[in-house]
Structure formats: C-alpha cells, structure tokens
Length: 309
Ligand code: NDP
Ligand code: OXD
Image (cartoon, rainbow, N blue to C red; front, top):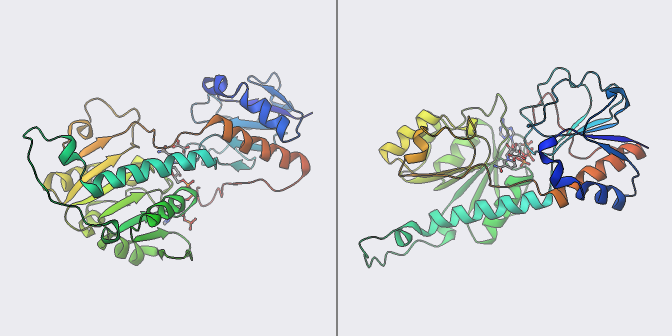
C-alpha cells in the first residue's frame, strides 16, 4: 500500500476527509501520514509552499511531489528535488479565477466605482462602451489565462492572448514574443496577467512596457507580484497613464502595511484570494495522480523544471 506524506500541516484540517474520500473514489488504497517516520518509505509527497519540508533528498522512493499550488516558483528551483513535480490544475480553482477576473474586468469596464462612491450624488449619465469595444490583453494562455479569456470573449470583449508558444484558439488573437507583447499591450484597455513567475517573466510590466498601454488602461494582476515593477507601476498610476490596478499578488505577502499600494487611490488590493485551491476538487486531482503513479501511467500536470513552470 503506497504511503502518502501530506507535508502541508497547516492545510491538513481541510483535507482530512477530502483526501481519503478522493483516494477511495479513485480506487486507491493508501496510507496517509502527516509526518514520515522514515522518509525512505514515502511514495508520494503532497506539498504546499507553507510546508516546512525543504529537503527532498531523503525521500528516495518517492514517485512524485504533488503541489497543492498552481504556481511552483518556490519549489521548482529546489536542488534537492529530483522527483517528478506536478502542479495543481484544479477545476474549481479555475472557476474561482474566472469569477475574479471577470468581476474585476467588469468593474473597470462599467466604471462601477463612479456610482458606488458618489458622495456628491452627481447624476452623470455617461454610459460605458459595450464590451465589444473594450479590448483586453490576456498575458498567459495556460489553464487559467485561457479559461478567463474564453469567459471574457463570451461577454464579447475582444481578447488578445500572449504566451510563450504559439496557440490557435478560435476567436482569440494569439501572439508570442517581444513583438507580440508590444502589439497586445498597445491595443489593450484592460490587461490581465496570468503568467508564472520565472526569470523570463519577472518585471515583464515595467516602465517601457507600461508606456505602450493606452492612456487610462486598467491592470489586473492575479498572476504574481514579481511580474510587475512596483515602482514603475506606481509612477504610471501617479501620472494617470494607468487608470487603475487591481492587484492580488505581491512580491512580499502579506503586503506590508506601509506599502504605497494600500493607500493609492487608483489601486485595489485583494489579499491573494483570486483563486483558492478547493480541497474537494483538488483532492481528486491529487488522488488521480496517485492512481496514475500506482498504475504506471504518466502523471498529469508535470512541471517542466527547465522552463520553470
Ligand atoms: P499555466 O502553466 O497553465 O500557464 C502559464 C501561461 O504562461 C502559459 O500560457 C505559458 O505559455 C505562459 N508563459 C510562461 N512563461 C512565459 C513567457 N516567458 N512568455 C510568454 N508566456 C509565458 O499556468 P496557470 O494558468 O495554471 O497559472 C498561471 C499563474 O497564475 C500561476 O503560475 C500562478 O502564478 C498564478 N496563480 C495565482 C492564483 C491566485 O490566487 N492569485 C491562483 C493560482 C495561480 P505556454 O502556453 O506557451 O506554455
Ligand atoms: C497558486 C496560488 O499558485 O494560489 O495556487 O497562487
């Protein structure tokens, strides 16, 4: 019977019922432990960045490390990790991200704030354009970016997607490379960043690239804080060149109390809640990968260590 080490103690309460149930549904008989008496006896490691576990070398028999997080930047470079690493692709996390992105995109698109906060009771009948006249750039067309792009498309937003490799998605303009990024940004009134944090994506939105956006563009960053150069964003917001930023992820989390994002009138901070891993559905993803490992089938959602995501 395989031994599964649930190495994220702070999350165990959420999985106490969900993981055994999902394993049973997958037809896998396994022993789940939260502390491994002998690392060499562990077959699978369920991991989250909060896990104290950092040295994977003693887990000589482990067939895979299964991340509860979609973003793996905090483990992908771990030199002691030689086992296959699978990231989280959780359908309910994806649903959550679609809701967050569509909700905040609509807020900017419809200019809701003018009516929610209207202390002077101004009767301003300025109507927003239709979504079909509000171009969106989706930076990242993976699991989450593509799902969000499709949801925005369904509301008739013209969406231009940008990714590392070429994509062919009906109704979506798909671009790559430096020139593609520039084209996507020049035309976008709303930019959504759903890229992983890698050396290639760090500070992707910087003084130069932010300047490509049209005056008043809005930015939604549920991806990672490091995708944006904070100082360049603040300067662009102060000038009004960037009309608004809704930020869910930050270089330092929790965002320090004295960080200028908190008080900036053009910034909304959400505390890394855009899309949570949902235990019921995530446990099924973990269980399916354990079933695959036991059956000798390829794992789902394998991270490419060289690519970094
Ligand atoms: P995926 O790996 O499925 O997608 C990543 C996308 O980014 C892909 O389209 C990929 O291109 C593209 N990409 C990566 N590097 C580059 C590059 N150098 N240039 C251009 N495109 C690039 O990830 P997910 O969609 O599942 O998740 C995206 C990120 O969202 C996570 O890494 C995490 O940081 C963040 N996240 C945030 C959450 C929150 O609550 N705030 C919750 C979950 C995730 P290609 O398709 O060619 O590989
Ligand atoms: C994740 C996240 O990567 O919550 O799963 O950011």
